[in-house]
Image 1 (cartoon, rainbow, N blue to C red):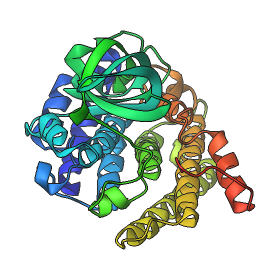
Image 2 (tube, rainbow, N blue to C red):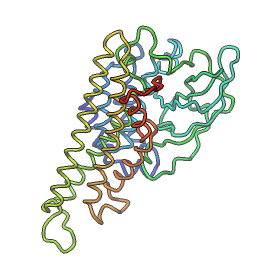
Image 3 (cartoon, one colour):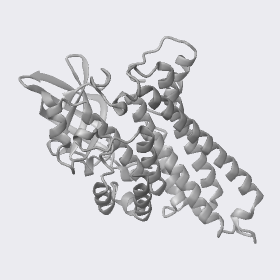
Image 4 (tube, helix red, strand yellow):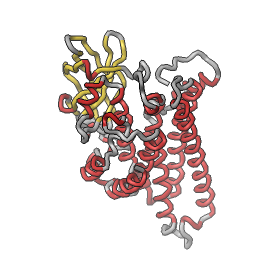
Length: 368
């Protein structure tokens, strides 16, 4: 899977400008991701999945993001959504993912209301940030039903997909708004993401679900930062600042700043994968993953995203005047990095959440 991801990353990089212009993944890239089965990597074996570890899934998304952040982002979101196949009732899981080409997106925030009716629920509402919806067949969406947070799988064809994704960064994710107008969803496609993993779950489903969601954002951010570092090396070895006979790479100030950025990125990445591996080891037992490990995971994910943005900012500054143009990969990396930091799973409020827990303060941990 990782060797395949490296090949897809190269294609994503080649198509990055097309992806950005179209404000969704380039069609040729989507076709390759589908052909390589990289938009369903969170599925259990009974639904056609290979059941990789969380580390392997997230490393795959990170690798693809080295080519283009939007591509890595969409792969990680699709992994998170396909993971929910095991949360669906068995009949619903087969309906959504039984077709080996079926791909799902997802927004779990309860932005709608559901009315209980015979055989299911009727849902109306509007959701923002529907990453990857334009290349997905299904989408998991959150809503409130009788005061409870619920999630349902909707065919994308039954929703209005609006053209709202006009942003500074991560333009290629196509994270546009979707609207449901009194859409009926049968009980077989309704479930809860806050009640814990289903009985008899495999390790991936026992891994902290909201922690995995945060980790999927961090995977794209880390890959984007590594891609920015690589692209800066390519630029620095040939670019000579105005009035200088030395390349950017030959300047002492560049060397010092670049080395410090490299150290920061490696440290954040090391903490990130250590937290993932620790939570995975705990999920292999029958006991719930502890609050302590879930706290460490969320802390590592937020730190990774925010450190990645700082690293990209360093190489963007080192790129000088050449980095400010729209056709500069560093300019796109910079915008993508700082758009990722706005995600609610990794924004500064997450430090408040983990800080309360670290200080022993009473804290709601259902969605930790």
